[in-house]
Length: 150
Image (cartoon, rainbow, N blue to C red; front, side):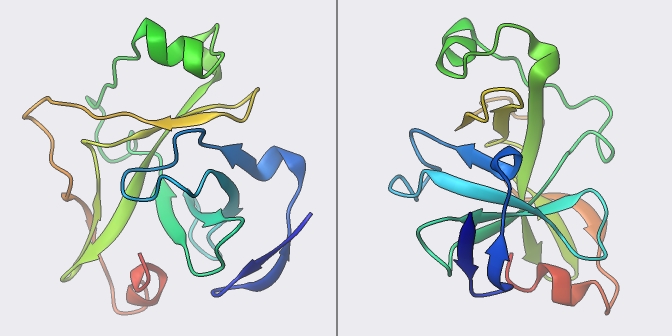
């Protein structure tokens, strides 16, 4: 499948790169189909590119390399919505933002994706230990370009 991206132009994506968020994402309920594109030269980061909106993309990453004690309890209802029978098939990501010199992650609104069904949900956590702008790493000048649009 070919999709348009304002960052990367026309991109060919495979079925295993597609993720459907039936409820959309917070603030973007109409965008439900996304392609997960590896971020060039930034291992462990991906662009979650909306299929129907070339200008809508989120930089995402797995938060566990940054926070070993970060844990997202997955409720039974969420597992059922994702068709997630084994939590080992779940992938956890957080949306990143550039805040000053820092790349931050929204640890209060993580994304949970079933790697088999390619269904995803954004869950909302209430634990006060984390924030929606949790610092992940200080950006170097060359890294600022990667997070510019995040």
